[in-house]
Image 1 (cartoon, rainbow, N blue to C red):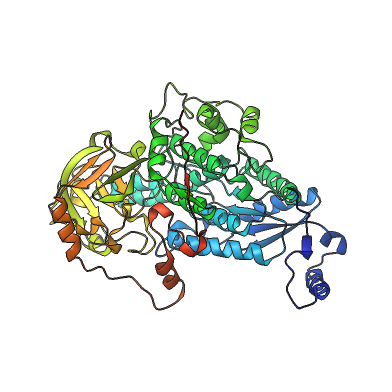
Image 2: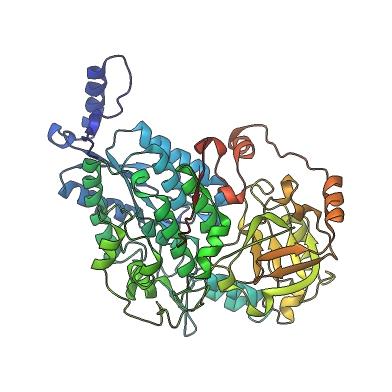
Length: 577
């Protein structure tokens, strides 16, 4: 469907006189030096998420310039405008708490201002899903442009990069394997440039997800932030945005149940972040689709992990880009993908993959005969601890721990953990199961990445590198370990995790896809009945809105009022013979 471009005439402020509204608008914009020749064109908005608090977006000014060039070369008028910018390390209590606020800001600024299409420039973890959610709801032609991954650094002869190596070195420091001098030295080596984490963390995962769903140009997920490739992709994105404005091609026409299914296939194949499950649930929810966690797990059973990147492998995003990027990965599993889905390029996924190249390096993008793992990166668990589901990143777990029963060592909340986990008096053994409560969507609030529970210091000193950990929170996509996450319903709303006590036996079984506390149903019910669940509330502001409206993990932590009333179409879709 082709929609005529409206340019500055779109969305006029209502003064009761449309002619005067346009006259006033043009008078003010001409104060910035524009001529009628410039203003009589389609308008492409460019979201500018520059922030001094967001080094992941440090290249945004250059990207805005390159996008603007592509827009102008195609005969349209570029108009950059700011929105909220969120960085994981600079957002308190957590960036996830602010994701929905950013999605609302994105949606409302797109609606409020005249634009025939919009380029979504973002990169850090929660930015890309927030922008996709907002743009889907705004129903204006939109195209994603990620900022791109940072370059790697070097430390004492080895390649390092944020943020899997951040966690690895900090673990060594906690275990007293390296001293203060070395931890300070490596702190200046881990981040080689501006840009998002250079491993398959949440930012890189969501960049790949956006491309896999058709919301970004083919090949755009992996180009490093400070390269000429990234600038050229920005110019091409601006060019394509003008074409989309003239075609009226919006994301609700691009992202279908089939393209969401492709995204989950790619999530498994790249060994991607567990956070992507939550974000995809929210993105799909804006379109009226409802996440089917069991289908997510089923897709993973016949989708191999092919990308050898940290934390599931050894390499970095710049290596993946040199090896052919996401198109090369998708060509390897094209038999598992729906090739008829539309992309923002205006061509189908199949047409784009026909034009792409095979992998240039089989050590980075493995072939089907030599995968990193024969099954997908993420497994879905259920059981009496997680009746609505939980997640395990099996590709980053220790094989010897995925079938394990151990004694629970329970922390009631993050404060309790911070006060006790480093104590030499903590009663904990290597085969115990560490449980952390009250870090879910409501409990924290914001479901922080505290699910990456540190190894207790006394065990770290003994050389313990991994142990089973269970929580209702999240962990960074850059993290690794045998960690059960997103336990739902969360403990703060009376979920079964709230009833677990130190000394209980917890059994994890990847083969059975289960996570259970080994007490009777009657005992569990009695414990839950005796709990006093106090509803969380706030007096005012965004926190009050958040606590009243946020959904659980399987529904994406979106706000209920931002999703369609009816969400009956399940995603991903399993095709059966």
